[in-house]
Amino acid sequence: MMWEKEVHIPEIFKHLGYILPIVFVLTYFLVSSPFFLYSMFFIFVIYGINYYNLQTIHNKIRLIDKKKTIRLFPNEMATIPVVIKHKGIIPLTQGHISFQCSDTIKCLNTSSSIEGNNRSIYKFPISYQYKSMKSYSIEILAKKRGTANLQNLELKAIDPFYISYSSLLYKYKFRTEVIVFPEPKQIANVNMLTKMKGGDYVTHHSLFEDTSLIRGAREYTVNDPFSRVHWGLSAKNNTLMTKEFDKTTYVKWTIILNVLLDHPSSWSFSSKFEDYISYATYMCQYAHKFDIPFEMYSNVVMNYNQSQFHIETGKGKTHLLKSMEMLSRISPGGFSINLLPFYTSLKRKLDQDGIIIYIGNQGDKTVNFLSSQNQSGTTIFTVDVTDDSANLKPFTMSARRGSFA
Image (cartoon, rainbow, N blue to C red; front, side, top):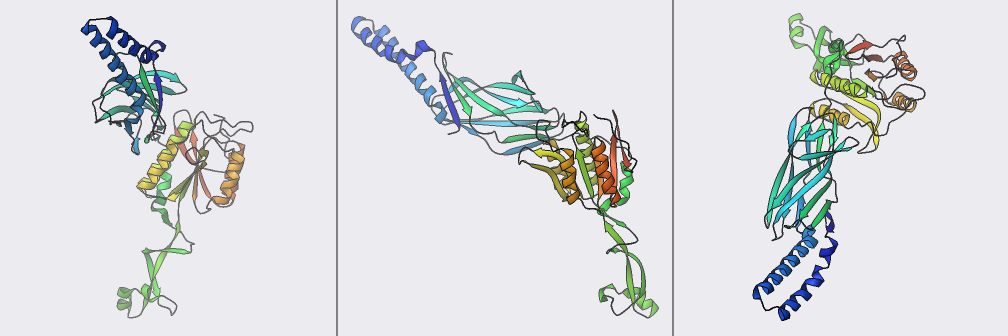
């Protein structure tokens, strides 16, 4: 059963079920008017049908709740379908559905009242015929980054006389979820990374070679694979020649997103954490544009699976979509991980051949961590954020501590 039922009947009408039969019997013997008798009988029947309908309506109404994900950027619009199937024979002429929703989205074609805690209550009227199915479309406008769904959904069926009603509370989580992606904010000087686009770049010393980049040729030796013979040049020189390829190294980005203040006595989210998320979104989109594989870490615990924020290395549209969805799910009301254990765990996980891009507040803990990674040979860039802009800069040992914001 999907509903929790609560029937509301005024006290005076609760006793009509006992009073009306007595009145009907007395009327039959004491009053000779057939009209009055039929009127009393009609009232008794209507009351009985209405009472029975309110008590059993939860068995006759079904919410068709199919899993669906709606993905939007801020200021985009969509619709959420609410489908009601009625299996009974008594129609509903007046009723409404109410629900709560976070301020990540705004419902446009419903009446609303502000409740507080960044949530609003919405309501819209409903009616249905006997044995019918009806769909109601809720128009929504994406307001800001985050996720939203319809919570505490309640259907109220009111009798035709507006005397009593049955309140049905949906027992489960509404399965349509709205994900509002973070809006990317541009970072200056990020083009310094495009020379590494594609994931591979030429280097003088490496264990790997790119067989699509022929650097030259040399004379064939007995240890050379036969597949590397340069047949065209061999025919020209009348001797076997072996292809030589450019040596390459694999490049990936490791984006580290710190949403906390780097302060000895603070566990608070930075006042700029929304900006940091927008800059991380920009870096993800930039990496996707140039086909650069990337991974991402953040010092938050994701509510939906109770695990640390981590996106494994990958590239492509699906990887970008997953990254943006996880960034959308970061909530300032969720759990966070203090910087010292966060950085300690990263030291065991990070690949020294990758490029670290750090986004967040820079204090002593952060600078010490980045310095240790820099000493081990890792290339590091930081995103320096001011009031209205951000710049990508190479990290140096003399990096300036950021202000606590």
